[in-house]
Length: 248
Ligand SMILES: Nc1ncnc2c1ncn2[C@@H]1O[C@H](COP(=O)(O)OP(=O)(O)OP(=O)(O)O)[C@@H](O)[C@H]1O
Image (tube, rainbow, N blue to C red; front, side, top):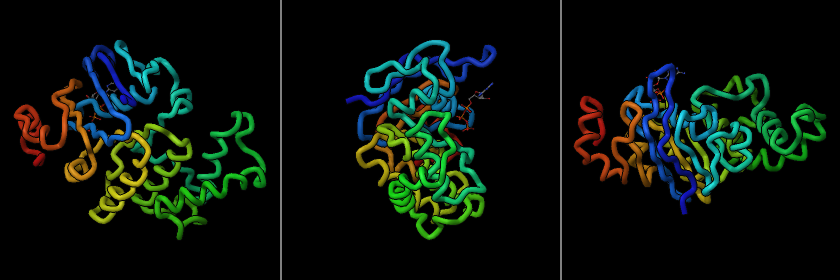
């Protein structure tokens, strides 16, 4: 079953075409990587999938339902959430409180966003489960501002999971991490992908090789190739696009 698809997506910024007739098919349960050289249009495509940008033409479907003109909050409610490259955590709140606020914001009307501590506590069980899942248990009560870069990325993934998405978009989950951090993220992505569909933008080819069932390669806003890691890395057009960068 197709979880997420795009047909003929076009996005222009003042006449510059950042996304050019992109078609994408992500099957339910797969981990799908979007790769491409700098400026290829990966982030723009992510923004189109999540509703943070609207296409000039073409459409995005989530489980067969057109979502491309909906605002991001409506798309989240339909089961697609994304993490951002730029940290979206509240630094002054503890790890636990970040999760409590995110869980509560999902379950209540916006006017009720800030409520009593007591009301927040009903989400504590789920918050602690998510903290465990992303390996942050020893840091539960620490202000998020104290976390390392890698730990913040883990917290962000936990925050994204508060929406209980069927489809999870991860924007460069390993960016800025050393090899140990990268290995932890690989384990984490595998874990959160159980029972979910994951689409990730990723520059690190060893991460892509480890995780991705299928890959879409972008160049100059267009799809250059798609297929398994082995199919894609043997594709002469991909090799040429990455000349000077490590693919194999
Ligand atoms: N808001 C915008 N206004 C004008 N041009 C934009 C805008 N957003 C993106 N672009 C341009 O669109 C192209 C694709 O950008 P995008 O950020 O999607 O690429 P990317 O593949 O994510 O790059 P990177 O790997 O470097 O993050 C770039 O040339 C960029 O300058």
